[in-house]
Amino acid sequence: MPIPASFDLSGRVALVTGAGSPDGIGFAAARLLAELGAAVMIGATTSRIHDRVSELRGRGFDVAGVAGDLTHPGAASALVSAALDRWGRLDIVVNNAGMISAAVPMFESGTLDSMDQATWQAALARNLTTAFLVTKAALPAMMATRMTSNWRLGPPGTNRAWLNTRWISSGLMMPIVEVTTISATTAVTWAL
Image (tube, helix red, strand yellow):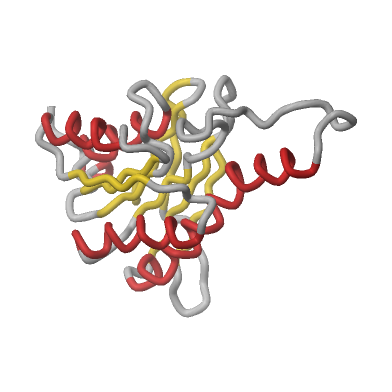
């Protein structure tokens, strides 16, 4: 069945973080964006990202991947640069990295009275700083296309997706991306 014109992402480039797990939200988002026609750069903390690239390329999609710890500014910039070097543009960013890392599989949790500040900081870095650093690295390229689409998915088992979308034009801001929840943990974005 052909893709309706309003869903067609041909010619667009998407970047998806946290796409290393074969049954995770990030990989599902990357696969759907590719099915809708976007070229997709995917990132994860370990080399398993190359297995996800192979899976998507095996289905005929234009995909590349980079492994790196996105809590570090250099890794976030390298991921964005890899997309720009390959396709020359960036239109969509899905900030899905967070929760737990395959590279450091320690879940930062605990009660307030038992948690130390280092654990608290690690949780913030993995869940918030990654989104900040990737978005900061991607923003100049996205502003060059005069569109920004950046979304952060909610925790597993929830029906939440946060969307920050702006059209940069003469100081006016208007939404140009719609988010639809596909299941309790998966959301999809596309340009209107």
